[in-house]
Length: 133
Image (cartoon, rainbow, N blue to C red; front, side, top):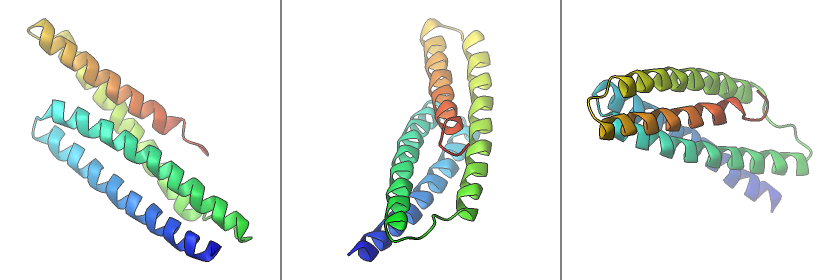
């Protein structure tokens, strides 16, 4: 029974990684095409995906421990590195959004860029606070 749950947890971890990779690509594409508001919303969704991924990985690790196996470390280190790079990207987006807010032509645009900067900063903070960092 535990083995079946472990197999399901491994599938969830793999699917979560695919979702996160796709969402990162989507955000980059939206940013590249100048759709900053949509990119900020996509970053918010990425944040949710990453929270879920953490839960999936915790579930998998709990099942591995119950079966007397050690959680994977190489893959974990690879994801830590990806988190670090993603956090750096988020921090660069915070700076860009703050510059856009400072140069906005009206209050509505300024508010948009301030909110976008806050969203990127929140996502970067969560990435930097992930366990094992």
